[in-house]
Length: 118
Image (cartoon, rainbow, N blue to C red; front, top):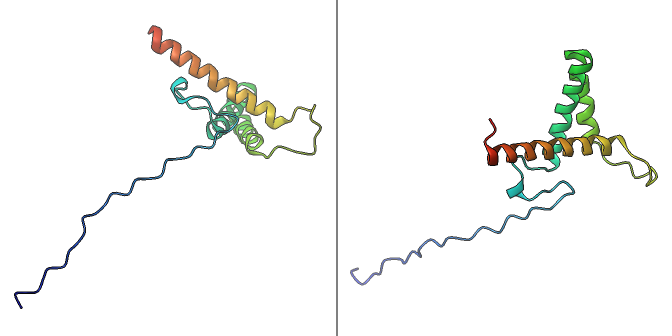
């Protein structure tokens, strides 16, 4: 049986991973400009934080919990298609406030990073 050949096992081949596709949303900001990325998840989280801060300022910890829950709910709620195009929905108001807070934080963090204020 010396004529018997050893089975040939091919070398493992590394399969390249497909590129990660990120679907842009209306909240997408270029990554290099954002310390905290402005996307749907961070906008929803910030909405809850803003609701908690407003509730705490207006009425203490119980109102803070209610504010956080209601602002977060409004941010996650689907846009109502039945409303007229001229009307402003509560979701739009909460999302705009959250985006503004994130953009302000990113601006201040970038400013501090460049100027070493603190």
